Length: 393
Ligand SMILES: *Cc1c(COP(=O)(O)O)cnc(C)c1O
Image (cartoon, rainbow, N blue to C red; front, side, top):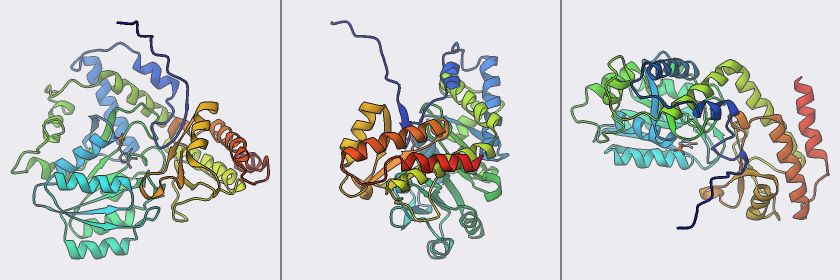
């Protein structure tokens, strides 16, 4: 066999829908020595991880932990534990991840009804209330930050309506957590999941989750076992709780990574972290406006960490993204579903949300859009972004 060369991964600037850039401190944490999953040192790391997760989720939920697997594993864990076969479920769909919730809820045996909004739009509390009255679900599932469309779904009023209807709420915060305020206890969310590789600035591989006491009680009372052995919260609880019963071998070094990324978020402070995401979004937005690029998301509901913008007419999607990657090392995201070929998704998530990246991307876009014959005032994008940064001081 020919000799295989060692890995030599290129350095990229990750400005897509995830994964996002990894803080060097997180990569360094991953290179620490692997210990056993029942080593007293590791148990301490788990305890610290749980307490930091409670802070970022803004919850006191005991059952707060990291599922082994990416965001989708957290999503599946929430769905298969909360939904019992035959239970009525309401899923709100306004993009790819709402659709995925629907698919998972059906697979879990739920009797699932969906309500839908066009891509880029968010749900009003009124239409959710109407559906609650009509469907009388036991469980409602909704996405807070729809990464396929850049839409920021307000949760507070909808969560209150779900509670009034005596249903339980599953909330997707994969792209939300660490980028915009997530208030699990204030909203009384029953099951929430996230991922490490979006706004937490950590490689993909773990899924933070949290279940309310009410939810845990429902799960422990299930007459029929959760069909997934790996994701069964009642068994995972025996490992993450004080019993420390072996369930599966925890991904030790991924846990180190998440531990360090949470330390970084909390060192900065959640409010400062949200403000940084917002400032970089406003600068990007001003720069894109100067290039004649508009948002594809319902006005007033644009996520700061995921900018879904319309590709200007006359500009080709694939050549621009290819040149961004090949000539500048920048990755941005393509449009999915109905946005395919029409929208770019520019992520400014976690450690990627930096002034350096905003200015680099705008400069690169000026060059590439000019080559495509797109008309705009040269230099105006950088000037507009700088204007936002200087007025923010
Ligand atoms: C990325 C994402 C997921 C899935 O996470 P993976 O880490 O890709 O498995 C689920 N929901 C939303 C809103 C996401 O953005």
